Length: 139
Image (cartoon, rainbow, N blue to C red):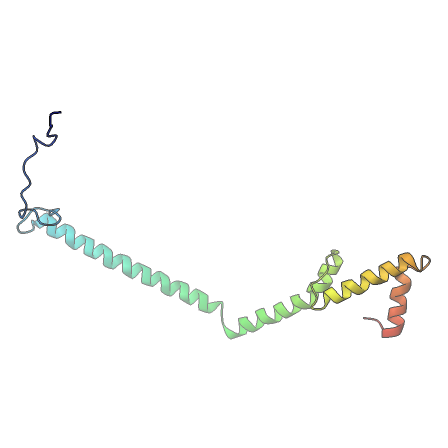
């Protein structure tokens, strides 16, 4: 088997001449066009930073205008009204509100339904509701 040098036409590496990344621009002093380009980029960065700060300030003013203590109190009052009507709204649409002791109430309702089916076929749920209202008063 003959050894083949695949890199025979490449120039030998000049270690020490190219240390690190080669420069992007030419070496030597900047030309007038390069100085001008650098200056304009700097101006553009400064102008963009000023625009961003101005936008932040405008947004902050708008945010603070909508978050005064009076408006926060009004939102809290609206939330309280909504929470008061929420259960009624759910009941009107046939959805049960989640109550803290709903598991106990559901279990009791299941036992009542089971008793009505097995032991008291002539008694309806309306009779049971009327008896509960007579005993404990209307809700």
